[in-house]
Image (cartoon, rainbow, N blue to C red; front, side):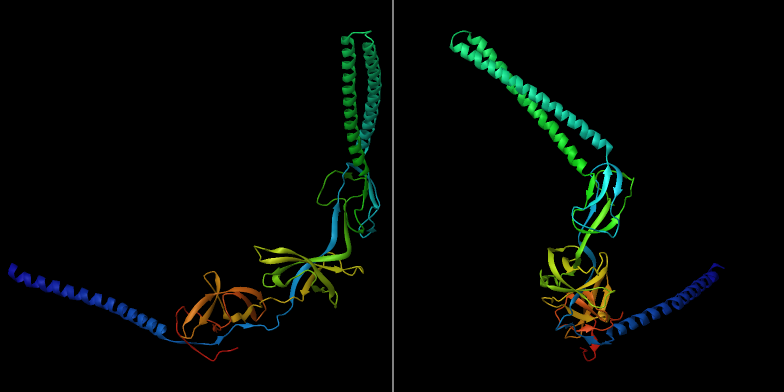
Length: 393
């Protein structure tokens, strides 16, 4: 019985092994086949040569004039604050009024300051009277000392008596100097308060136009500076505009250069001139702060207007320009695909300047002799060999 069972067990194990092997082959072979197909497709794609269209950077022979935006500002503008505390007694001007230098704008009622000035005047008068009394005592002490010194020469009094009179005279001299110093201190306090009292009258620091009025009669006025102030006065006969010139144009900007100012509300540009530059670039923006001034005696322009400034200066070395459709933005940087003489693609990082629409300025990364791929797709990879069509200018 045991001898007949053993062949059956062996046959069952063999049959099970064959079944398991068949199932394994049925699951593994399709996967191996798909991997071989994917590998073959990848090799075919890698070996496949893409056809690309190339272009080259160009450099404009005559660069366009530099035009930059800016805000028109008054050549001189200030906020007028109160220096004395009190209540506004009256105001004499309002927004839009033209004022002359030194013209009275408002008056402040300062009862506390007036009382302090009155008290200080009394203190000064008392200190002056005290000084005069001590000066009279000094004159008497000097006369007494001189008489006792004469008596000593005649041997009518002792040297001790003369020394006592001299000591009293010198002590009185010190008292007079102390009273004189006290009078100077009281007079300085009075002068300071009187100077503050003079600020009760608010006057225009220069000729101009009142562009803001922030107080009215009866308002409580606090001494010191504030952002709004009592009035704002601007000198508008001459205006200025600050512009930020890019680094590529900065070496060509000089004081005295002519400029044209374009304002949307007027058909013709206004003539201006570069008056000064910062002399150094802003390290964050790589721009040169430049001031342009223009005449406005006719009052046509208003501070705060938006304008565009065109400077006739030229770039020392005009940058290259490339079509916008050659750019690639990958790994956080702007690149272009450059094709060498061996028809192999290599990516190159570039620095950009102004966006001119269909073209963009390149300020770094290219020399001008490169061949760039137009509309590079995802199939363009580093080190890939490509076929090129005739180069476009």
